[in-house]
Length: 375
Image (cartoon, rainbow, N blue to C red; front, side, top):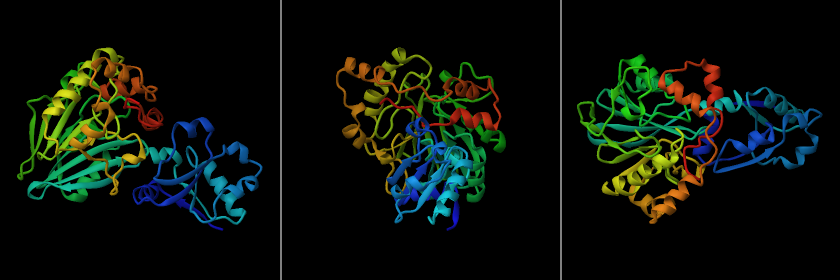
């Protein structure tokens, strides 16, 4: 039998198309329990590689013959060997090129919608990390919002679309992933915007992002309006785009709300979080479509692979938006915080410009799921 090589892009298509897949994950049990490839119709077996050194005969009965089988490990080496063992036993198998490191890095651009007068809005879905970033395009210009560190993905996409990136925004100082905002701005000559209340320790120049920020992309007037919305960080800022879409950063998600503690100030910021969610957002039109900067569970993906939902529906369905008692809300937020993201303090310092890790160090910092939400 043949051992096939699949790229992260191939797996992403299977996730978005809701295809069946059986994954044999040969990482250690704790690594698998913490973070795995999620799919709507995926099934799993976790057997550490070291338990398979004598062969795969004992697990063959548990591996289906009517589904595609993918072997996964951290970097690919172990999964190649196990896939070859399965092949020697007469089974078709594939391995993920680059392992979980490649899965963590892959971005799938998906068109969200056409905008007024020929504009377009794209969501870049980082399935392996739960990060969501955006590109607004209009008449030859583009703006990028909450970019992850793979700047070339955005610049290449802009080149493919024949547009020039003129503005780059971060809704806040990120703590769970390294921002690509400054690198994109440097590569394209675009203006980089950051909320000043999150930028007190940064050591680079930026354009302050405030309630007064109003940027027009292209001649077709696709407006990007800033809305101060603290709570996840003290500077967190949302965007209303084309009067249709609300980009909430890490304040509001589809199935949860943002955590206020990644700078160690949960008790100080929980009141700001409630003010944003229960007052500032309540003043907005309920027909706005919420586009967050992260998703937590695969069920948040829509049929087309996007993560988006009407604000009015979230007011009705999202538990974090329906706690009337302020003390109960405060307790819910501060008592249900998940573990801190991997290397979050170092990541914050990278995003401040204080650290300059190499590619491998950046990869290690970001390994694992995002943890930006209250449980």
